[in-house]
Image (tube, rainbow, N blue to C red; front, side, top):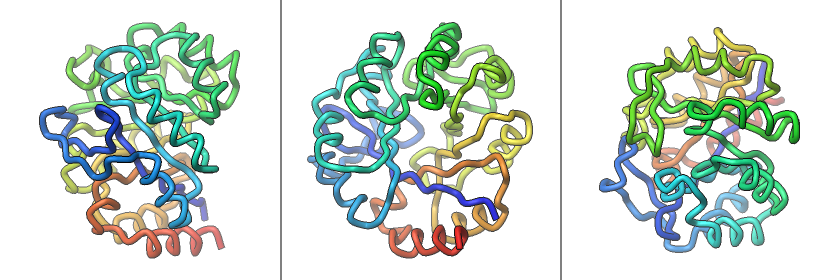
Amino acid sequence: MVAVILFPAIDLKEGLAVRLEQGDMARATVFHRDPAQQAQAFERQGFKHLHVVDLDGAFAGKPMNAAAVERILETIGMSVQLGGGIRDMKTVEGWLSKGINRVIIGTAAVRNPALVKEACKAFPGRIVVGIDARERMVAVEGWAEKSEITALDLADRFSDAGVAAIVYTDIDRDGVLKGVNWDATYELADHTRIPVIASGGLSNVAELRAAVQRAHPNVEGVISGRALYDGRIDAAEAIDVLKAARA
């Protein structure tokens, strides 16, 4: 059976750990005023991987919550992947040198695909492409703009680039606990050889268990945000599901 990684998520807005609904910055709920403490809590619960997004950076096109990210890195030993505002090699190099394990390139993957390819060559295994979609069409600039490229076509752009993974987010499911769009996720995982991480809408442990039991060979993991914060997913139970799959 293929093991699935569960990535707890910390989304950063003005230095706080928040969750948005459907990518709308006006619909933000603050879940922790100290993101580093939240990261420590996830680590104590037994998680080994962490997904962090600089929401302000995604809109600004440059890092905006660097202090919060650096504090997270100082206080935990988890593997951290970071997205939001990563649009050039200087930013890629900067975050990787500070201890980020993998950087996620989203908007720049659409606007400047050469950056992804250059970064993959320079940092093998450490570059992730973020594909955020509405009705399978990719959105950019913090999900504020819809592009003219489909999720499958964007994945094809990087089929031989050495991308470590794709984080695929269905924007309409994000933060609203309606369940991951598994149909679109599995469609992408079937289409590309790049491992896929599902994001947006994970609602309960039963859904996680079903994903683990299906064990799609090209689905690396799933990200959870709101359901972990509000207790719909019990961390200990979720980790037990993952341990059972690995056993």
